[in-house]
Image (cartoon, rainbow, N blue to C red; front, side, top):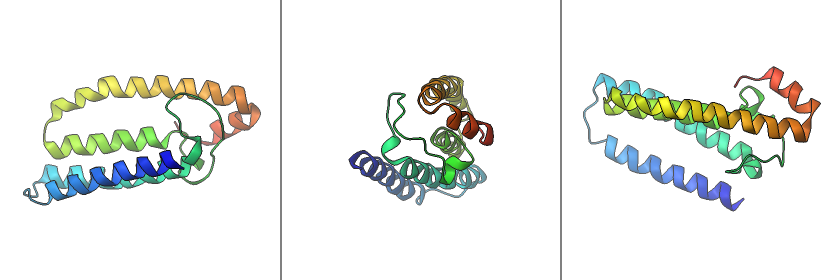
Length: 137
């Protein structure tokens, strides 16, 4: 529970600081599009983290198979919404060269998700295989 609250506090502090900074800038098309992507992605990232609860860990380990909420449709919503949030921020900054971050981030997330999938399949067997067939990424 402590890790859940700490993560939420960090994300909320970041959101408040970002919004306070963004409020003083002109609303260009890039700012509007970036914010339209980043804001809901951040909200869904927070929801995904809260729904994962105590099953969250930095290392791939299988304590609980979370299959409800956002996890009912997406196996790795933290990765998906984290990437969308980052894309929104990159668009918001109007620095498309920062998209090179995805050249590193996306393969890392794919590798990590495969490792996590293997650990979960070893622990939960057929239940995880069935869950995997019903969900995306």
